[in-house]
Image (cartoon, rainbow, N blue to C red; front, side, top):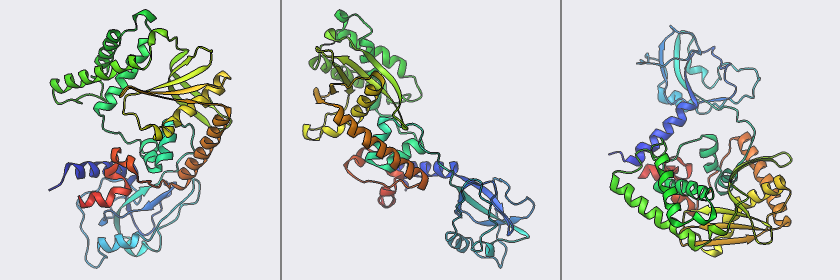
Length: 376
């Protein structure tokens, strides 16, 4: 009996295969002149009458194999030994000698050709995607290259709605920034988001949604135990940034930037998830250091402090920064950029299994979990 996990894994693999493959009829003189980069993958091999010209894109149909030809299984096994790889503009090859014995002048062979499109060099990079590559290059590929969708969760919905409510809280005069106002802003934001394609059908029934709402408001109430919004006058909120750092372009959206009592810049990032233990908190500042680097370039001023504000707890982690730390982050970011460009050029995105894999939504198609998933 097939499990739901197996069905999801198959669906995602089918999508990747469909988006990167074409069905073609080949004969002994066929070339793949229209493919800049390709490899043969005989997922299906069969024969049909030569009623269509070679290299035609056909949907295929019932196939019969005439006697005296090699079996599809043997043809597929032999074809695996062949791999064609061309740069753009290179002269197209004719059929490989490895495949030629299975191709005929009079009959056409149905083959699935997997197209390996040339991946363009990196154009822009966000702190989130930089963090993905640092954590696991394969995760970066799934999200940034394959652009696979991830199933929405109640936690994602809570985070998106809470961020919107906290952003809008500072649209109101300081004296009005109360828990009651924040709760209303959360309800309004969710009313706007709940009908979107992303969050449609997230809840099984009204009671589940109601319970989620109650828990979300309880989480938001914690905000007032960390800071007093009536004393704050943000310099900017939800700041959409795009900066050229001398050859690398970084983009991202910064939650909030303030000035402290001494007039120094402070960057704050809201978190609705659980705070890590303090001894493990430093890596969580990775993205904020990148934003601090962007602020330094954009405003000509080095922020004094980074703050991670975890509503669960609640907990606030703070990190003072200086130019030395930001220069080190600049070097790390350039190294990451170069590593991503090499991965794109070689199409090499290794997995890095670890504890974070437990929360990854791509386990069913990840090479690191493929064998274990098949056993399940």
